[in-house]
Length: 116
Image (cartoon, rainbow, N blue to C red; front, side):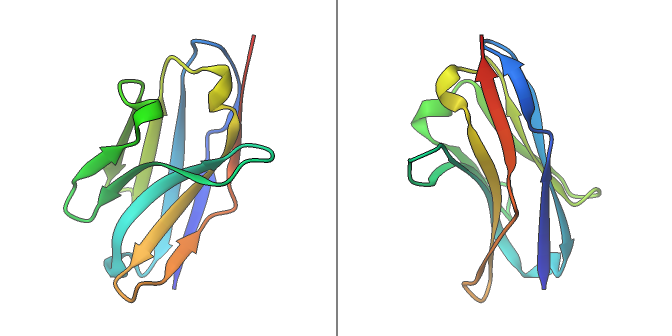
């Protein structure tokens, strides 16, 4: 089993920064990649960024140059550093882990609200 817990969301002004954390527990050795998704009200869930077990990363176009995904292996945590936040970044942000079995695990999400 793998469990994910997001934290770090909140209310931030346009242009501000936040760092989201995804704490991973359980069978971490079965994880092949960890991703951040987001879902705004009335919208479909969309991929934001991912990091593989080998350390490769990818960020989607809307957040390139503003967000960074990283991990701390010792702390079993994956981070999403968000800078220059825009109103359209307002969403619930979810952590997702893909396992070697193909199964996916989701956290409960953390709300990010960007406002003036």
